[in-house]
Image (cartoon, rainbow, N blue to C red; front, side, top):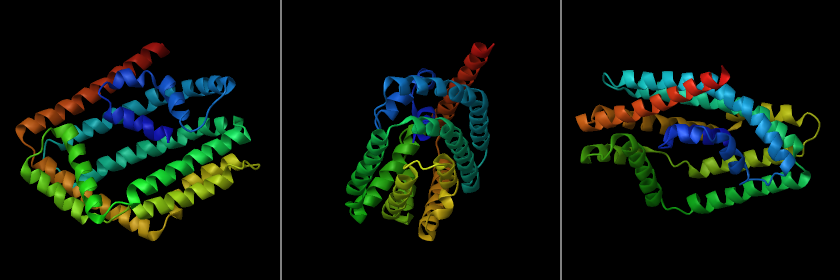
Length: 278
């Protein structure tokens, strides 16, 4: 959960360097949404975050810059669904590395939690599951399609600016091609929470079993979930490629400016990291 927040911050914040330099204070605040830490645990978390963030700045940020440069290079010619899929694969690989590295301190922190804190953590996760079920499963088919369409439009407009009618129609068509995924996603999430509940009883060897469960998580989901996920990705990759290929000169300038600004922010963070390590 915290690893995902890091990627969201880097991808979506309007002031990347400002936010990134404050992750050591933001992450504990975010964790407090799930469990209240005592002063000793707060200090322990601070100590564990320092090497984690140093690793991320030194090892991961250069990878992000390279990925952005690849995106910029792809924009110089026709954009294919395969190229969009390649960029997505790079982001997914970054997420998996982040997840794996985050486990080092998340599991260490988990070992310091009291039984009451563990129960608080699990109850919070289950409450959120109930909220998600209420929010997503009560939608009609029309509402699901409209939410999917608006999400696609908002994501593209963040980088391109206002879309024209043809671009909107392409995204509308994509939203109609998507297979509804909220129900099976929530089923898989509920099954994972049940496994996590057992793992967090923290019997001897529990930390390794958590690692193994997370590593094998993709292999334990249903065939229906995998098929739906892969189908929807193909639909979205194709739609993104089509919209990018139809972008106007104004949209192209905005897109490249957004990518350039983010790349420059990341390079600034890397320089700050090198200076602090010197």
